[in-house]
Image (cartoon, rainbow, N blue to C red; front, side, top):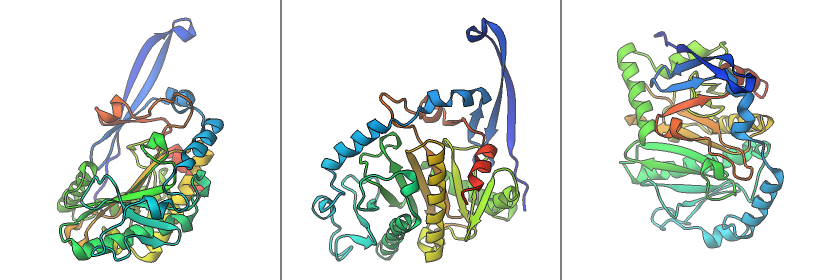
Length: 348
């Protein structure tokens, strides 16, 4: 097993603080590099005291009004799924849509990839994070896998899959109603492609999988959370978003080849993370599972899942993704990964 380097760079910032009658203040910054990609995140411990200014507290009256108003014309509610959502052509999916439990999968009206279905997760218009129960998530993730297997039969160019979710407007969702979506494409989108290439480069250099080595390095360490079936859950050393948690499958690179138990175990893990996020006061989130079709994956990749929190909902909330993330591609760490992992372990 190759040794993975967790690089930290420290620097000092000195200034005269008007909040302390212009006494001199010293801030100690820590910059972290992702061991695989080299992506940078930065931590200023003094920002933790300012977290409420960054994220605020969810305004429950605003959320109630948002749910009520959006529910009046939601085409995922009631008969809306039948009357208001697209259908696949009969030569692709005979019944036009896929159903697993309450989950319903159908085409996206505005596709962002060769195959871009949406999965309405449930009949309920709004869920608290603790209400994303494992069975509900498993049905949606299973519908996505069934769709992927159909695509594999019909489209040999379909190689790269991302199963994703945006929950509520701060996460980029256009609808309140719980749903997920997936992209199946002949070209990996940017971050996905970088993960694959870096993983395979690591394998060529070291003769082992980076992701297996990562779990070997992190297990029993301060960022490791738990093992759920064949998934290892941990908090990344240099996160790409707020409160990021990730899971790595121990061998399979292809979402289409996960067993039913693998999908169920992933759903259980996601449910636990979302319940944990609720205890932190968060409501909005994004997640993505990254996959490569088996015979295109090379030997360095594994199926990976990543989830992050997004900005809370209150009047005139600020966006938590700004120049630092969008244009400098550097993430701001509010809570150190080691502290986040310690708090999360009790939920597994």
